[in-house]
Image (cartoon, rainbow, N blue to C red; front, side, top):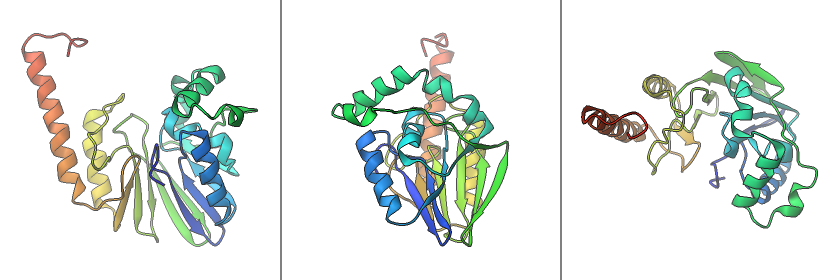
Length: 225
């Protein structure tokens, strides 16, 4: 579902695996009901700590929530308090007041350091810590489905978002994504794409880096740049 952000599920014979969830409570409930029509939600994978990826944990109510250890550690840098979280959801979805009754921040139950393999209903999922858009991105490779869920390391049709980015590691993560045996890449924002998206993405990143270098060479300080 391409809302804010783009969210995904993989349906297996043993239940459903979800990747992130919508920011707006109304969208989250719609997504939750759609998932329920496909089977029980066994796992919800949070690919990063930014609010648009994790506020829906409470609505989706997966059996278990999974993230990298770094994402877990940074949860409160995005959702600084329950009051702030509710206020932000109201900003995105002004009519959602009634949907916030009883709302809580749901934290990951399972964390991993570098890589994790999850198996469910005959499907294999490789969770890979892949810094880029943030220092704590998680890529999800659905092996049998031949799909990679890229989080915000790829954003087709948009500029790369340099939000607390791990810039040089980002290029390494793009190379890792390209090396996977998949037919589709599903981003954190935007529509699914193929390998043809990678040259465009790298070119834009290099343009931004070169622009920053030029500004620094003019003598501008970090904050000015």
